[in-house]
Length: 411
Image (spheres, rainbow, N blue to C red):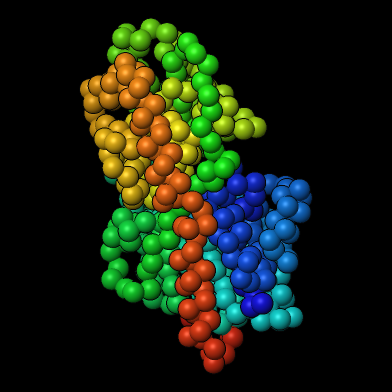
């Protein structure tokens, strides 16, 4: 079996949040074709049970600390030096030294970096071929943050957008392949190159399954996600302020559960609004999906495929979402889910579903079918393994060396 180095800015286990889910399923798919060395950065203490679990798919797991106060300091230095904050935040000489030592023992045939912050590692480690999974066009996300923020944050976000854009451009210039989550993200990157390939997210339709709702169960809405992540925070706050009170006048018993770890203070305060609950971290989101009547995804800043939407659809829930939340999904709006872009449309679409139990059931069933037909992980990861195997065929005679245009790695 050929040898593959997978470099991640996070330890991708358990696969219970957005940044971990895609990375975990890439590793799982690649493990059938390659001997994998995982090199990951971990903020805070190293989760040893997670490391042990990942050894089911990886022959070696290398973890080094990153982030914290020193990471923020490195990020600031990087930004003012023309780099990105995230690039500086995730710099670690320790990780690079460990990976180079692993390469010296036995060369890597392929190296894959997960998110643009890992590009310096990808270029500093000897490998026969290099793949960068940008996941989303993060420069566009930072640009959206800048456009919706006041000074001085807008200036910082704009600088980060420019720095991340340079990383994205360099990845396309020097890597053998660059991955994004959807054709919409490929279009948003706006760099014409055959190297740029869409490899979509999927969902585990066995883990997320429809559950029988008890007859006469109260009607409820649910939102799931990391609740200190800005797009999620702004989305639920907007929904409660702009939609919730009007909607609840028509359905006084309706409840809204905001489910996810690390709720920001402004999110926690939403629990003071009648009918709204904020759970914080939960061991399993499936009971909350099972108890819900409708899943909502009011997102106005964000990129790529939304796992929360796919998970709700796999669970057989009808979904109402903003246009940004369904961008990149191969679905039929109106049949597989509903879309709303103003408070009035949100009230109208949700009222339509709340008043029509057979219609809700039919939409939930259609959503589940779409997931099973188009979004199973094994099918979604097939292009990734195909790209790796193609690069191996093209690079049989290429010497395994670090890239000639290396990037510096900080302390």
